[in-house]
Length: 493
Image (tube, rainbow, N blue to C red; front, side, top):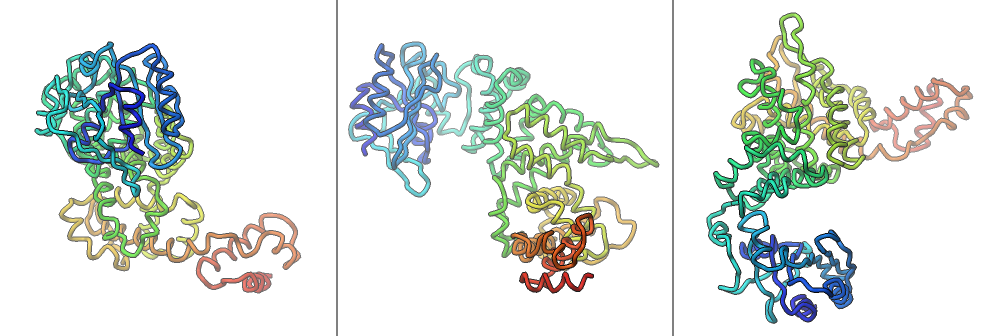
């Protein structure tokens, strides 16, 4: 279907605006199509007529502003957002937009076609030369790679734009202009007045950047990171002797940096483990976990026997994280995942502190963590990798998959030898979990009734102990069938 013909058949004067036009001018594909039209008394009726024409569902996104969304029920599944000009004219509409590169408009006309890309569900569009309405220098900023506010009012009119400025710059690899950064710093506190759902959405889209740590550092420099996460403010002055300038916050951002690096090079760090990616949620959720993983270090910091310690910061951090994520309206599943891996993020290191990692120890580790095992190992990998420089990590890379050897006593917490050994243990855990535990985590070969029937034992704690022994044998590969499990049970009398 020719989308342009369908739209102009109902709205003779209609303009492509916003991110879709911006991306089209940058020769980038886009998913959502934003359209603006002159206001009219029958706007709603026209929208419904267009929806019937496109075979689309239609519903108002904002009844006050008359913003409607149309989503096609069949391919190409185009999503169109339509609205009348803000302020009644194209000129006033563009003047009310956020950034100059988004304050552009192109009138649709026959012959201008949207091309659907079936593999990604995106569209491409080739704007004609000289047809773009540009009243605020957006084309110049687009060519220069600059994100510039349309006016001094953009952040006060809608404070979520404070975050959006960084998110748009990150997505396009653009720079914010000095005036934009100055305005952000002066008005960062306004982000607290924005609906939490909108803050969450902009933040998570920012974390999709492959260099999200750089953008988080810039957010912090201009006051926005701690405006979104007030609990992080105390990190900067906490454990400065331990972590160097910037304290815990320097470590936090470095963990995000290591995650950026890991997700861009997953195959090289976890060769042969393509299944790992299948077990992971979106990388941006891990980066959020990294931002919050040491949130409780400042309140839990204490000097014990002359040494700075953070006892209980992981469990308390999980509770703090739950509150933060609930405040930003994350889903229950997302909150459960992030708080769980934060609350247990020291466990892999505690396991790695043993000279030998037995099958029994790994089994108990996997059994305790269950579905959170691989996400926890990913966060732990980045946490440990943050204790060495990028250059040291590069040198370690060929040895990360070697068998871990016992460590000499007395190594400092940030010893490269200790980091290497711990990361070797993490790789061992990845390997065992994927190759052995994934096969054995299916339904158990026997259950409690089998134990009672086979051994004639009464109900009680003994049943669970026997089942655990059978499951351990299954994990170790010593039994593979139900008959073998029953035979092993009989030997446990």
